[in-house]
Image: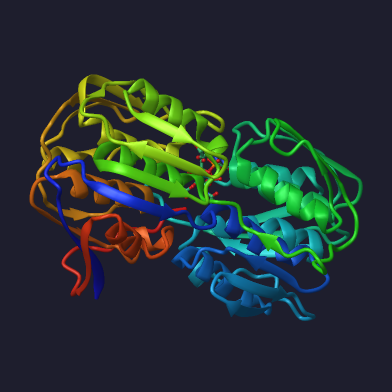
Length: 438
Ligand code: EPZ
């Protein structure tokens, strides 16, 4: 059985209206969950989005011996007890790239970790060379056999200077967490600067870690003892990608949409791009208000590490560009294969030409027609939902449970509340389920 969304399109009408409340950020929650391995006592995490990926991360921890109590919706208390295993379950970790961030805390605390090569491969080969190199710099020995990794540091990790040749988000987080329990000082250079990294550092610092520079390209971590969660419940920051996706939907189809519980400061690049496309946007401290303009103007986008245009918003933005007058180019610089979904937009009626695997040319404005779509991954999946909402006629989006449900909590109820005609149906799979990505 596979879950599908059936969406009746608005046929270009701009009539969505109301409020969308943003949930906790998937890519912050996953790291906070992994960081519980650095604690000697119970840690309480709140505002955790109830999505497949966070549930899977808790499963992974439970499988290793953690005690996870779901106190109420979005609130989890996690304790790591004696006998915690150092092997990440291949069954779970293989399906989730984010599982890699657990390796840092497990190795730092127990001197050993083993794991499979994680995650799917639809957005490129996604190597682990940065992780292997960094662990070796910290004094660990890495054995790779087939697609399994065993990393050992019998006498514990030693602080080191790690230069990341790419500004990798999860590598930065992994070494930041590993450094918390390493001997001496760890310095991460050319570190990624995504807000989720600064948020994680702030949380760990409240609990006893000594991390400085998170959110800049150089992060310094002074190693120390296990952290304490007592008196420091951690609230997950708002999901900037979810907020950005609703902002794009609003820019296309809303009479007036209020996006609440978000942090507009994390979306500067998107907001500026939408403003250049002619969208009127009002921001408050934790809210964004958007109204779809009568005409959208073409605009070029190039994905970039934070604070540049996020790769995770590239697909929804491309949908918007199909409705803009003129030619726009989309340049994906972070991942390979992350423009393949545009074929399906072409099948819906978009005029998109693939220039090379990293660049497409979008000519607008095109009328999109409802189609049967196979969601290739989480972010392109939501882009298809947006395309289906503005299209003429009905669209059926397959593989919702293995893609969209990984990252968006109860998205159909929230869409319905603002006027989208969307239903979830369970169908015998007609299509091969997509590989899961992280
Ligand atoms: C994180 O992935 C996010 N995932 C991704 O979100 C996001 O798209 C990405 O950062 C970029 O913002 C999580 O936080 C769980 P990277 P990550 O390592 O850390 C190359 C979503 O939909 N690289 O920053 O895995 C890599 O191939 C997802 O929520 C190496 O070469 O991405 C890429 O070109 C998808 N060697 C670049 O670095 C390595 O060892 C940046 O990737 C590791 C990465």
